[in-house]
Amino acid sequence: MTYELMIQHKGTVMLPPTVEGVTIEWERKGQPGKLVADVVKTPGLSFQEGDPCRFSVDGTPVFYGFVFDKARKGSNPNVITITVYDQLYYLKNKDTYVYENKTADAVIRMIADDFQLNVGSLEGTGFSIASRVEDNKTLFDIIQTALDETLKATSQMFVLYDDVGKLTLKGLGSMKINMVVDDSAAGDYDYKSSISSGTYDKIKLSYENKETGKREIYIAQDGANINQWGVLQYYEKIDSTANAKSMADALLDLYNTKTRTLKLQNVLGDIRVRGGTLLIVTLGLGDINLSSYLMVEQVKHTFSNEQHLMDMKMRGGTFVA
Image 1 (cartoon, rainbow, N blue to C red):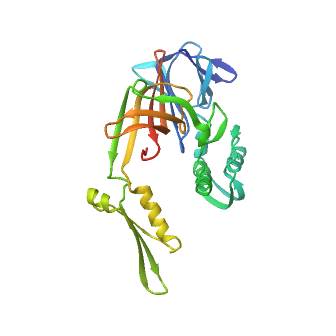
Image 2: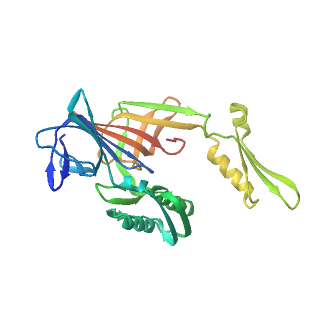
């Protein structure tokens, strides 16, 4: 495996050698892609914050962004630690938007045009949001709200990411790759099952009826799990009794289970894996035998000594990140 780090400064392309390794981190939402590398200060190497940077593996571009941080240590001033973010970093900017009858992909394109961001393929989300007022919000939040509204209306999840310098939006179904993580591919894992967070075996919804002056209560519960776990109650005041019982039942279906976390460590690397990728995990975890598609919530790629490894936080089903 060979990799190449390129930095461009005022039209001059430089290929500085790196020390030890390069890391790339991607998350499914709310954060830009991040590359960190230690480069050697060779004669003629000169670059500044804001300069574009590209990282390639075996000749294939994997990451494109801009230098945001440069750091040195007095004990070794000839090594510069650089932090590079892809263009999603600019979605941290705040602004105010008022829009009507726009799909989430149209909202992304509108913001990209306003902030001069490069756009690649944006998959059509198919649902028009009637109207939104987004006041003093980050662009990340404005876009995520549009994607969340789409998810509620269509049950379709979409993932926004930077594909080597171009904003890209894909439906979750398009994020599947033919990769299996099993005992032979994963170096190690951290697995935890719990009922201490996000688990409820009793749902209690309360409605204050102003006409009668009485409080109306709607309850859904699982007696077997209450006997096993004790009462773990979710309580919420609601504004309407419309579908209150079905809402309680739906919340019980959602929360009446153990939560699990799974972090895969030192997995054999694959440059296709990013936040939002779906891949198959087949592992015996002690209390369960797992063999299903899970979504990568976060991934950290490490390229070092001609070796590529990944650490991943997984999500799906009862697995939460």
